[in-house]
Amino acid sequence: MSETQNDPVNDDIVLRLEEVSKVYSGIVAVKRANLELHRGAVNVLVGENGAGKSTLMKIIAGVERPTLGRIILDGSPITFDSPADAQAHGIGMIFQELNLFSNLTVAENIFATREITRGIFGIDHKAQVAKANQFLKKLDAGISAETMVEDLPIGQQQLVEIAKAISLNARILIMDEPTSALSAAEVDILFKVIAELRAEGVAIVYISHRLEELMRIGDYITVLRDGQITGQAMVKDIDMKWIVRSMIGSDAKDFAKAEEHAIGREAFRAEAISLPRPTGGLAVDHVSLSVRAGEILGIYGLMGAGRSEFFEAIMGRHMHSTGKIFIDGEEVRERDTTRRIRRGLALIPEDRQREGLVQVLSIASNLTLASLGRFARFFHIDAGAEKAAVHDIIRDLSIKAPNPDFEVTSMSGGNQQKVVIGKALMTSPKVLLMDEPSRGIDVGAKADVFRTMRRLASEGLAILFSTSDLEEVMALSDRIAVLSNGQLVAVFDRGKATEEAIIAASAKGHGHTRKLAS
Figure (cartoon, rainbow, N blue to C red):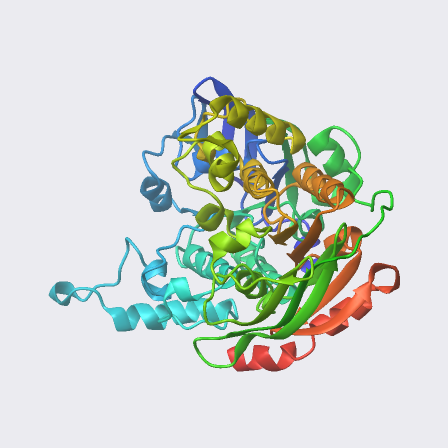
């Protein structure tokens, strides 16, 4: 993708933020930010969770109004009354948390609020499907526009969100974590589309925690820390160390493996776990593996490998799944999720917004939701014990929560993820399943989560975590299991694993399925 590294075609400034601040109930989210967006260039925005990136973008997209400062579009000051108003001025945004209607088709989602109509005959569904399929084909998504969104895995839902944004013909397109659920092949396709949009003069704003992506695709870079801009440069003039220093005020936090600790006896075993697909075939195909107390087993696989489905089957989410599971050598015969949690299983789901959190509840209530039995004293909850436990978990996970009674939605994505992890830990599990635990988490929050995983393992917890990030699986795992097309294709001891061997194993059969999908 070297073509994206050249100097931008056009150095025009299409939009400028001048001295913009945003304050929410006394908390300063953005402080006196000055930002310029260049036409026909990829404008990269980077910073830790809670640094103010999403707030800044919501101001540009008309979702939020600045408390102070002004927006200059094409040289003239402007105020956006709503996202629709910003959209009318050519500004589109792909949000970090998916903004789709799960009970509608892909085509209906792409054209929601701007449906194609045939006069008095109402919505022209046929035209919408044909047009939507064109956008999906551009992304090589392997998705039919007539599919219901709820039937798509999260990665493909992300592609629908991207197709929807491209369909707007925006001249400023904001992409907030667009690749967080995409496979490497899908990222390549997205980058090709970005290069095309850039050549057409579109100003792309690109937010990501994957620093190597930013170096690969960016033209200009702006770094935010604690709501303030701490660095601006052209990407060709800087390196990764510069980004990390600007982001966290010091060099990269160490992800390397901690001190060795003793690994105990087998804590968990899965035997021949299978899960049929509604469309035929198996999403999980007779997978057997075991984890010992104090061991971290990384499950690596590309999108569609069956990692999430394997975890869901273990947790009792699918009553039609087959196979056996054992905890501490005893078979778990309970089929439902609640009783499996009581037996010592806990899952941190990939989609924290929909499955991990209750949006309307406070940070504290979300943390204790799955473990209220711990605080029950006869017919009431011991509020003091609950409060102390909440305080401890907030401290242990370095959760930025000025007030635990605030709604959980008041926090940044990375801190919300830590709340989901905290909620699982408060059930005192023996076996912890973590599905893409670092999705949408920045360098600092990621280091906190990884440190926590190692500490828990050293205390004897058995951890299985899934990821499509090679660096992550190599840095964290004691052993690495590779899934491909629902099958367990290889298990490596960390000492003998190489990146080449893991990639080769994960690609088994993928070329074939990709052709079928498209």
